Length: 99
Image (cartoon, rainbow, N blue to C red; front, top):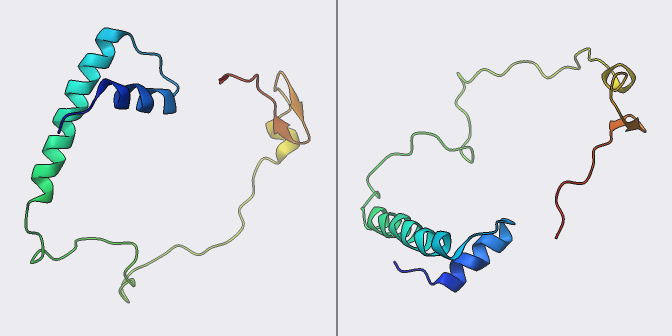
């Protein structure tokens, strides 16, 4: 599958990446190879393959889960006691992503 440079730039913009022209061309080729491989995998007939694990299926009777109970923790006051900046029980951090 061939990706256009416009599509690569669009995906890079969604990921907040700045790519050079050389990187855009390389990514178009690399992503195209990945998508071509995925197309080949989609051609495989898996209708006779039994699913190995699926979270949407009911668990068997033998499945064991740990008991769901409250556990002791630090508490927000102790956890944020040494934080350079905290407020309302949370860590405050500088904004690192800007558009």
